[in-house]
Image 1 (cartoon, rainbow, N blue to C red):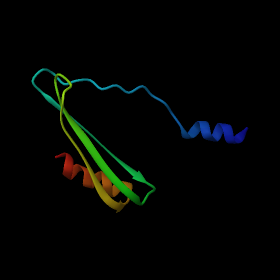
Image 2: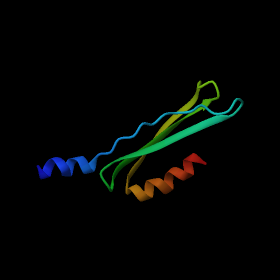
Image 3: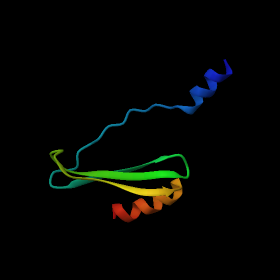
Length: 79
């Protein structure tokens, strides 16, 4: 019984949706992920226009670092 409540506390769910940008604008969505902390870390993103058409996509492997380090490194690639 304890294990069930413990596992329930680890996970939460929420509905996420993507909204296209205003006509004539573009939207850049990025994210990063890791295997452990510290661990192997990478990131990527997509650029879409107001009709939701994919204009550009990218991914990059940052190497082994902590989650905090990858957040800072991701800012460099997002700007």
